Amino acid sequence: MPDHPALPDVDAVLLDVGGVLRLPSPSHIVEALRRLGHDVDPGRVPRAHYAGVAALDSREFTEGDRDVWLAYNRAFAATLGVDGDGLDEAAEILLSEFTVAELWSYVIPGAHEALRALAGTGVRIAIVSNADGTVEAQLREDALCQVGPGPGVEVGAILDSAVVGIAKPDPRIFHLALEALGVPAERAIHVGDTPAADVLGALRAGVRPVLVDPYDDHPHLEVTRVRHVADVAGLLTSGSGSV
Image (tube, rainbow, N blue to C red; front, side, top):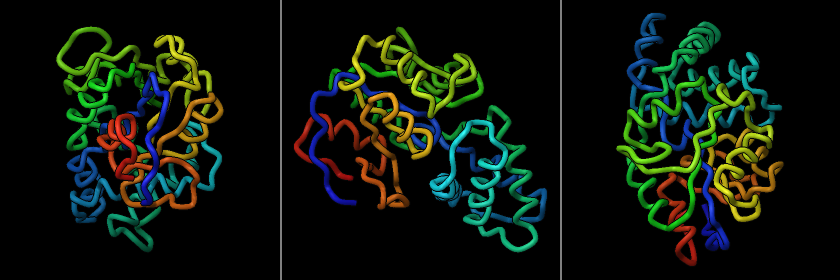
């Protein structure tokens, strides 16, 4: 990825959860596919997630749309080496597996440190996640972050789509986060991993998007891209970032 200049005039950072702070549990995925007779490498699960996201680039994104998530899961399974007649069956079982709250339980290495580094820049932080109503409790349990004092980084708001009834890319969920932080849209960035939800939603809300793209799957997009959420603090505090 090419270097980008620092992001000026940022008072707030909005963060997605899936693909930014957490990923699907490799052990859950391995066990689900083993039931179909597929022996897959758990170390490939992170790559599979981002490949699944890349498969959504040309689709109109609606949270809960079965066809959207089948496309994601087909690419996910294919990246793990499932092919031929087994691909559709694997996509279906993964679709079912992704309804289980505990699936998104793998904390991305370096996420705790990245949140602390962001907080250390002085920006206000909020979580904006398409989730199932459990994300606030899970983030606290992982000691990642929470509203108010606690074991993780203190953030100003946690917006879970299932709780607020609005999902990305609807700009209203971003507006709720900005209102909670008391920061105007033009002074905020949103860090997410899904162009159709995170980049588009942020732009609709007037927020500058930053795309987490660790495998360089989206070189065609004219958007600031980073390999890891840990890179974001550097964009706020230096002349160039590792992107």
